[in-house]
Image (cartoon, rainbow, N blue to C red; front, side, top):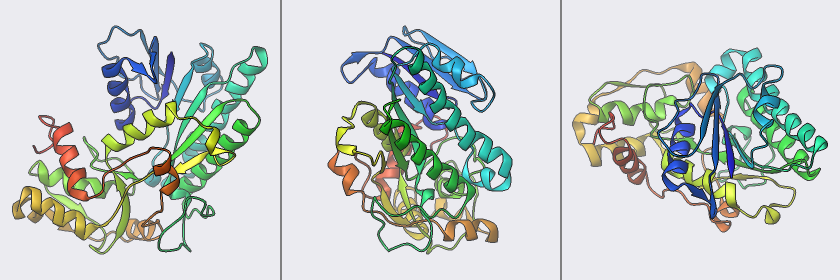
Length: 328
């Protein structure tokens, strides 16, 4: 099996690569080649599996065709400009998040017109496709009403994925990821970045800024769960999806206050004392329009799993990032 990962240099992409290499197989099939692509060349892992690392802008002319020319069997499309950056730079957000996705799907279609080709495509979407007005618990079939450019771009991507799958050009499955915490490494430009920062930095003995109220509620899963979602989506029988090709992933609904309480239970009051409250009205306004709780029953029935309390999420971070600034 030849696997292409677009967005392989990102946090989720790197963890996905490591998981695939550690196993060497997926769905009972040996992995025979990996192609890793991102705006900067992903680091090539140490493995006996042949790996090609490519620096490319998916939205650039000819880039998608180059990636598809080797006809990978499975494609993970993880590349995106994150929410805060997409909101700040309208042109860049639409170029990367929408045009890049459309060009990838079209490159797959054109390759299939030359010779039969129908790869599995796993598309990482987002709960940002939903926006107010919303019910207290959001069902999987809730109408898309995004309130950000990022959410709009992901919603259009979901529609394109469904249409290209309906027409038989590819076998697509979209997964709406919860906000992934605790993200290791340095903060990014995502409006949701503080959700990780208020855990990650205190665990490492560093100060963190909290720009919203403790009462803010959101939908979370760990990086460990996210990798599980992707791997399960790659091998899932898509027939039960019908025309509804994108699923809301399971997660945990928690308030910022509950996050902090879990941190205190595991790391003590000194860690909590490193959280500095400094309200940011721009971030608060963005977060206020985000969904807070979901009914992910459809995904759960298909075998997707996530954490059930925030302590589990913090423990996963401490275990997975041990010795790498994870605070363990």
